[in-house]
Length: 103
Image (cartoon, rainbow, N blue to C red):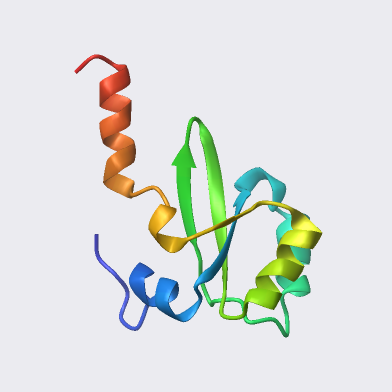
């Protein structure tokens, strides 16, 4: 996977913004996404987050530097607090899919 020059890596986001909320992606699309971003103005939201796919559902991970900010976001939009090390790994998802297919 290539990265754009200057783009943060996942480990940098995890270190700088360790308070993370996983939220189903379909809950923040379109105008709802815009409203969530606006809500986060003035909060310690990372410039970019993560996403992952589990059991047919996409999740976006909203990452914050301050625990209080993550709590405010979670209280408003729901989702689950998660530790960066608990986020599913990209390669792991492929292996699970292969196991279900019997290969």
